[in-house]
Image 1: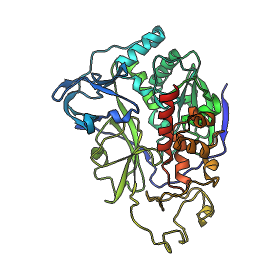
Image 2: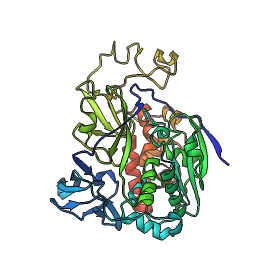
Image 3: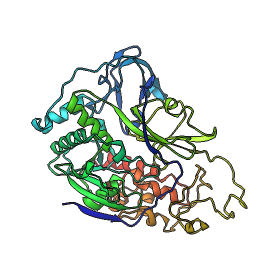
Image 4: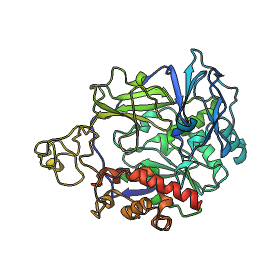
Length: 453
C-alpha cells in the first residue's frame, strides 16, 4: 500500500526554457569523455593507454581502494588521449568513437536466477556498479556493505527538470528488470517514489517495490528528502540510491547482454532557442548538442540543473550522472542599484520573500535569471531563510556552521549522516551570505568519512 508524503517547505524556482516533449536521437559524439572527477573520492588506476582500441564495456580504469570497482567505456573506438593535471592526476579519458560500434562479449541473464553476490560480481565487472550511490557520504556504494533499503526517485523537482514519464515511455520491461535486480541487493525494502501530481501506469505497475507518493515544492523530488521522510539514516546504517534512467540501463543490460549507455537529456534554459529532449551517449561532447541552439554569446553552460550542476564550456562533456543541460545568461556584470540593483522595482525579479512585487503575479509566470550573486560573501547570521526551504527535521544553519568549523561531534549530533550537498542547494540559493554551502557540506562529509566511518 502506498503512502502520501506532503512536503510543506521548499521553493520552486520558475525559470524560462522548459524542454518541450519532443525527442531527437543524436548520433554518437566523435569524442566521448569519462572523467574520474565525476566520482567523488575515487582514486583511479588506468587499465588503458593512448592508442589502445576498446569495445563497449571494456574497462578504462578501476578504483585503487576497491579494485573490483571498474569504470568502462560507453563506446567503442580508440583511446585518443588521457588528460592529466597536477601531480599527474587523471582528469579525463577521451575515446574517439569508431563508425561501427562493437560490444564486449556478454549474454542476457535472468536476474531471478542470480544470487545477490553473483549479481554484484556481474555488475562490478560490466561497469554498472558506479550507477549505485550510497548515503551517508553520497559516494559510489560499497558492495561489501548491507543497505537497509534502496531508494529510487521517479521524478525530479529541480528547475527545468526532465520529465521521466516522457523519457521512459515504452521502457517498462527494462525498468521492471532493473527493480528486480535491486530487490536482490537488499534484504530491506526497495522504495519507488513518484510524483503525486503526475502519477502514471509506467511506475505504479512496477512489482516488488513499495510505492510512495510525494507532493510539494522542490526538493520533494530529491532522494535525500524522500529518505528523511520514509526511513531516516542513523550512524552505522546505509541506504543505496540510483537514478531511474540509470536503473533502466541496468535492466536493459540484463535483458540484452549489451551495455547501452545512452540516456535522454533535457536541453533547457532561457538561452536555448529550441529546448527539447535529446538521446545521447554518456560523456558526449556538448558542442554537438548545443551547436546552433544557443541564443546569445555571453551565457553559462551547465551540465545538470542550475542548483547542483557543473559549469562547463561549450566544448566540454556531459557529466556522468547528469540528465540535463541548462543554458542561462552569465551574470558577471555590475547592476546599477537604482534600476537593476537593490533599489530597483524588481518587476522582472524572482524572490523567495515578498521583497519584489512579482509575488503578486500568477504562479505560471516564468523568469529569466542569470548567475549573478548580487553581492559578496558576508557574515553568516541567523535569518531564518534556510529553515523555510529545508524540509528536514534538522537545523540547517547550525549544521553548516559545524561543517565550516570541522566540528565532528557537532556534525554527528546535527544529522550529517542524513544529508548530501544537493540537499542544501536551495539553502545556498536563498542565503544572503553568498557562502558556497554545498562545498562546505561536502567538506564536512569528507571529514566524517575519514574520521568516523
